[in-house]
Length: 203
Length: 323
Image 1: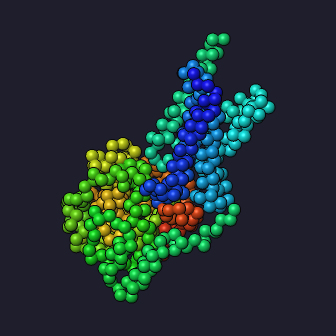
Image 2: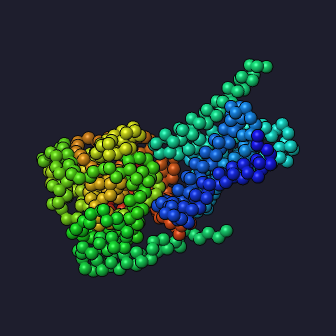
Image 3: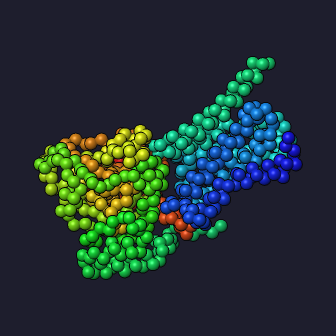
């Protein structure tokens, strides 16, 4: 049996470290340590790396609730907020990279991108919608919002759909990788639908 | 935060200074001396080119070269779109080791007096090799400057006596799934096919390329023989050529088959005509290393900066519709 003390002093720091690993790897690539390189197009390499890890962590976050049902223990829920916040961190940095490195703060061009390019529109929307979730992720906000907190945080479902859709849409031709993300998301959301139906049938 | 404006980042800020200075000096001397075999070797001396790539001899500089500073060899040979080897930019370099570019044969057929299957030497050897430093603009809005080695395609084509019926030239890439792992998946319709109008194919800028930086083409760059049409998006410049056909009708082209609303037959670089999903108004000049991290994009030029030479080919053609 894992105690709360062990979670606080060992498991949670370990989870933080695991989430930080891609970022550390990126910094090592930037510093060109040990033969690591970002390649010929570093701006896009950073942008895409952050976006992919943000999306992966978002899917891992969404896997915690099904994992609780499968394992029958509540421990996965103790990591849900942590994972969600790391996902937000990566996706926010993903957007900042686009804004700062790829587009060099050229505001008219960025606005044109967001308005005119549907895959950027939905990606931008996904990151913006994540902000209130990140802000209200604290225990204080949860208490204050009461039942509305859960409703608000269900936004994560459309956000995840937008994220996967954004990935699918931006790929030039080879959609195999985005389809894997879409497939995982479909399973994770399907699990919830199935659970809700089962629960409804039982009552 | 203070971010410097794009315009004060000169190529000299990005390229290693020694490479930059040396190139200018050599270009200048080559200009004064006329034909010289010094130039390609000079690039190679500044660049770290793996010894496995065979040096090409008798390469002459060309007045058609751009003055822009070339990208590094590792950038040119490490960041590629060559779906036959995989769709990631690093795949072609990583996955093309099994590819055997020699011996090589090309089938030349269609509306021409001389047709048949010809080996590499019989196609390339009758011509003097030239170094052409060209801008290269990918449809994905990144660009490079590349010192190709090749021969004007038109001079090669003339030797096969195209007939008056030959209005287009069609090209085809080799199919070897055992050596080209990307061809195991139907991402595109294999073989990759491309085409040009006869006037485009005969234009002096259009190059049949055999090398880069004074050495033979790396597999990932389309060894042993590829096309370079510098005023068109990169996907027109078909790689690892095995067939050239003179045609009366416009030939099908791979990306146009794949997504006709996104990629046209002409595919001329045009900042005024956006790709349906992204803007073509600007481009990122590929440059590795942390030093260029804050470099901004640069405006894309009509016909990739070759408008003075090629715009007349398209007189009367609506370029927005014929993209």
